[in-house]
Amino acid sequence: MHVLTNIDKKLWIDDFEYLRNQILNSNDNLKNNYSKQNLDLNDQDEATIVYDNKIIAFSFLQKRKFWGNINRSLSRYYIIPEIRSSRFKSGNNITKLMLNVQIKKAISLEREFVFISRKYPSFKWQNNFISVFNEWKNDVDHLYQVCQNNSLSCWQHCVYLNIKNVNNSFNLPKVNLNNMKICNGCINFCN
Image 1: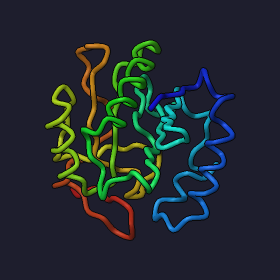
Image 2: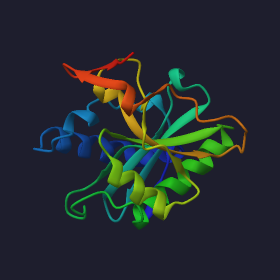
Image 3: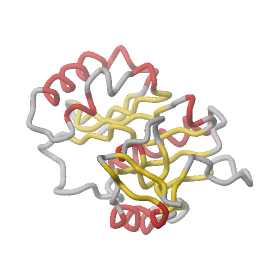
């Protein structure tokens, strides 16, 4: 098993686009996450492509102006179905490998935090992730705004890592679960 990154893009781009096309033509419930519209390779600070004779997994270190000096790690995480477990396992070797590469890149970019997010509800995933990677933090009582929209899909549970050891708190907009209500797929704040 070996990893290729942005530096090696010429070596993996054709294989990646082939796999992306396979995903888009599959029955995968999340296949639209991998479309060119929803996964623009230019919006990534790092690509992490894992090979074992072919691409077996990938994820990205995503950047957005909205986040400031923060990156989203393991963005668009994908493991091919032949080796995928029945659920995301935080401690698997592929995840650890990708996180190491992406955290090193975020450090080199002098980011303050990296985060990983999952759609609400993801309490079990957060607890499992924190138990494996105990230097990461979470706040199960809050959802964080990961895109500039008020739809429920833009408000997610996050785990985050302070990689610059700054005294700042993780500063994505957040809402307490007790102070929100969901109407027509959007979040409304209660008074």
